[in-house]
Length: 102
Image (cartoon, rainbow, N blue to C red; front, side):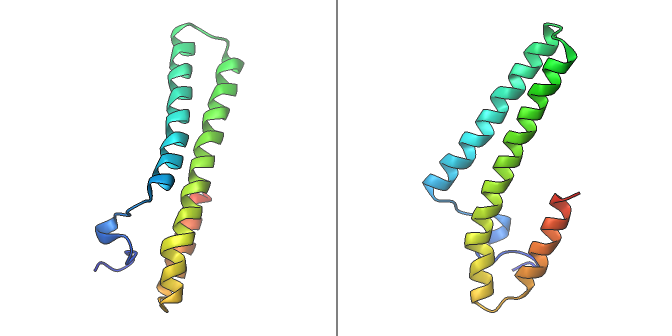
């Protein structure tokens, strides 16, 4: 298995429960709908501040998606790695957080 690859995520893949998948897809679809709304606003020459407010809403929706996915990753992959004595998971998680906080 590749270094820095979660042992629970074969070849950088992760099998999600139907509930987890549904929750994540719901958040993504919400953001996708908001982006389509922004596209329409631009096409219809909407007022800039109105568009910016909608962009802020999309950013918030994507941040919520990231929080949900991060929590799922912590509860499954990272927790299991630590229980199995794989301390490299902590380093991988720290690197991930550094990238997310840029």
